Length: 306
Ligand code: CP
Image (cartoon, rainbow, N blue to C red):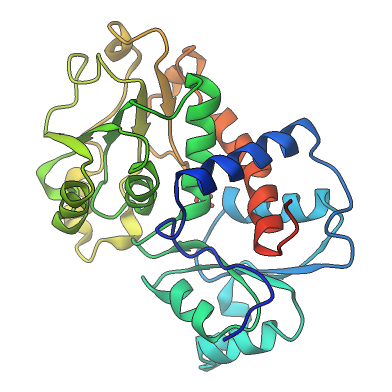
């Protein structure tokens, strides 16, 4: 299907230069977030799964750039609840919008949508698979706080099995010589396919089942994640693992000075509330960075970046 712009389904198709170029544009949008570059454009946000940050920051990005937004945040109010297929929904919405931003509970739904859609698709999360715009804002936050993306020690903590943001991050970081530490209970370990991806791409990683002061002492980035209740088939299992790894202030006593704590949010219990005031905490600024990064991603999808 010929498209007038570029879909963003995963970060697999981007190289180091593409990533840095997009982050450079995000920095320009941060310096100047309001313009009329999307004047006359209509962007559809189709959210088949709940969201606060991703949907609102994408919609804010469109509004700040002078475009207009249509869409839904609850698929139960749409004709998909009457049995309309995803293909038919995409074909209909592409009659009205220049770009579709979609979150869906099925892995692969965004890829499928991009194959049938005449307008570009941005994947705003597909099941436990990928969340590329989140990863781009994660990289932007790392670059801003560390001054570089190369050679970072990145500690990923929590639900590495179902957490799509950590899966997307591996793909994007393969150009930057990271050392990953996968810290999770056995039940939520990084799936073998992603470890195989690391081995095939020369990405260094270590696995840990303990989460304590010592394990995180050499981290540049501590990336906390929520245990993804909605992906469990057995809720008893969720109850058993949900509070296993909680970051508390006293665990940061040996942290490196440059350490920043990131979290894609929403948070449940995995970061104690009093960590919010710790100078290492960066997750609320990280979410704010999402606006600038998504301004860049929308304009890129519509071929509006020079
Ligand atoms: N990080 C993230 O995807 O948040 P939302 O689910 O609120 O969009």
